Every structure is written in structure tokens, then in C-alpha cells.
Amino acid sequence: MSSEYEVLYTENGPQALEMIKENERQLSLILLDLLMPEMDGYELLEIIKADSALRRIPVIVLTSETSAEVKSLQLGASGFITKPYDMPEVILARVRRSIELA
Image (tube, rainbow, N blue to C red; front, top):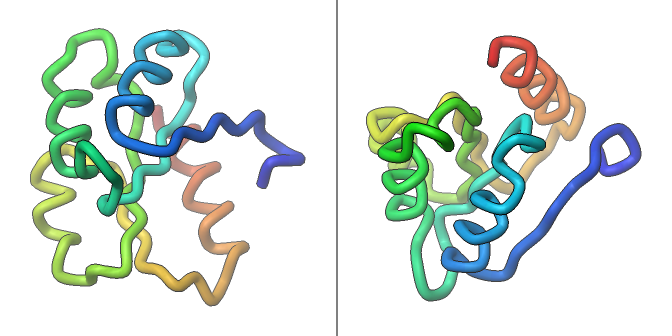
């Protein structure tokens, strides 16, 4: 995916929030893992969706917790992908479609 898109990474929730705010106009999509140190993905998703400047960016949640799908969507995620990924082409298709719809 990184050959088709410019990908930015962070190690934890606060770093992710800072990076998102610094790059809000350039970001087309956020792939968000729920299990992160310092701030979990749910908290970050709530912050993103409560911010009028950031809420336009679609968020696809990635996690091994299948029970997290409903809560993620209720908090504003545009998609949900369960790890481990057995079909990377499906992930790329979802990323493309989410960006198109946004």
C-alpha cells in the first residue's frame, strides 16, 4: 500500500493525534488500531469525530477484537477490518473506496 499512498506512522495515541492535527488537510484516510499505548483507539476516534476540522477524514478501525466492530462504527468509524488480514487486496479496496466516498 505504501507504494501507492504516502503513509505516516505513529507509535501511540497522543502522537497519532498530534500527527493528524499537523497534517489534517493532507490526510485522506486514517487506519486506526484500537490497541495503542497511552490512548486507545476508541478515545482517539472520539476526539477525531468531535473535532469539526478532523471529522471529515474517514477512519477505518483495525483490530483483532471482533466484538469491537459495533462500538467502532457507533463512534464514527467508516469501516472495520479484523486482524489478522488474510486478503490484503480487500484492505486496499476498502481504503480506495473510503477515500473515494470522502
